[in-house]
Amino acid sequence: MTKTSFYRIKLLFIYTGILFSLISCGNKITDKSKGKTIGPIPIKSEINWIGQWAAEGDKEKLLREFANEYEFLNQDVKVNLKMRDDVYKASDEAQFIIDQLKKPVADWDIIARVHANYQQIATILNDPYWGEKYLVDFSKVPGFMESHKSFINTDMYKKRYGNLIFGPFNEGQLCALYVNTDVAKKMGITVKQYGMTFDDFLGYIKNAYEYNKTNPYIAPIFEDANWIQSEIIFKQLFYSLIGSYDEILDTRLTPEKLQAIEKCYLAMEELSKYEPVIKNRSNMNWGRDNVYPLEDKCLFFPNYTFMYPIWKMKGKDKMYKMLPCELPVFKPSIVYLGGYVANWGVLKNAPHKEEAIKLMMHWCTPEIAEKWVRYTKSPSGVKGNFTGATFGGDPFENFMYTIDKRYGTKMIQELDNQYILGEKNYKIPYRVIEVLEGRMTAQEAIDELKSKLVN
Image 1 (cartoon, one colour):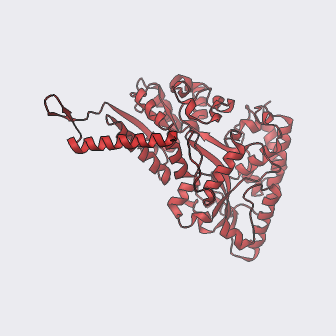
Image 2 (cartoon, rainbow, N blue to C red):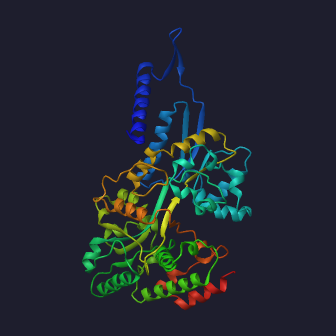
Image 3 (cartoon, rainbow, N blue to C red):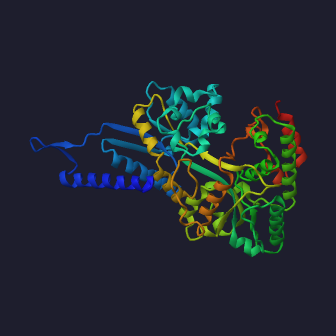
């Protein structure tokens, strides 16, 4: 019997026992010595938890199911789960977290999106190690490190947030170049799912350009007004040019890296000759228009594997025309854009800190990891026994397994710009969209970048 099977059988017995008790005594405790009903099971602790993934389909479903299950298994605990949009404005997120950190006793036990705000908060507080002062370090919680895959012990993850591990890395994200296969067929294109070179990609864009001369317009690449996703193409091309893993992880801007950056800008300029970006980008809103690929309005859509639950919610009958492809490279790459993020942190000044830690540790079980994979078609950083029973029939799941197996721990988060421009220059904008749209030449982008570099 596997560990997971034992876990599920154990849960079944627990559920059955609790259910029998509820039916027998109406959720009341009985004093067996006197046969008297004492009252309902008292709530000893209420965990205040800021969630995320609102309106993201199965991701939100999983989160709410998790909270309900945790309450069911812990009858004396109440989980007060609120989505972040119901607590504060997205633009105020970093300041909201800071306000909670500085209270004698916080209003919330578990806060969301620490990973997305860590660097901004470090800048505001002028303290790159602020997490050590205000957040629980889960690397010191018994059983936590053992529950995760081997990436958790790499320097990359240890150093990312000031040498602190503030929560479970349950969410895996892989970058992908989605192609609408119906549109590709209409254009006479067969796109390589794996091993796509830059020359292959350039050829696809040329085909789309020629198609649009004599047919109703279909955008070669979707982009919106603000979130520029073509940068992941630029970055994967960059990493493919660096031949040594140690060189990639060197947070200094080396001559080899600067030369690779220049080649990537020239590649973007070559693409710009064929009008690759959607013409009305300034009118596009990502949250509203991420259904464009499903509606056959674009050929390519660079993004993340988290698109699966969004598209399943918005167009379940159309989503399987979308094929996630490995990002193009100049030559076979050592690393790939992707990895794991910790969604939540537990505050040291939380009113129910110990209960919150226990809840977060429940995220670190194989069953929850397997459920995450099934619901999202993205990997989990928590160990599980998911066997890939549908491998071969689901393009989203196939992509996840293939990339995860191919690159393992050698995946780099798309926002880890210190591995490209160096630790002192990671905030410099890339200006990729300006070059792709022909509003800036490759040389102009290179010159501007060099003028801002700090050695």
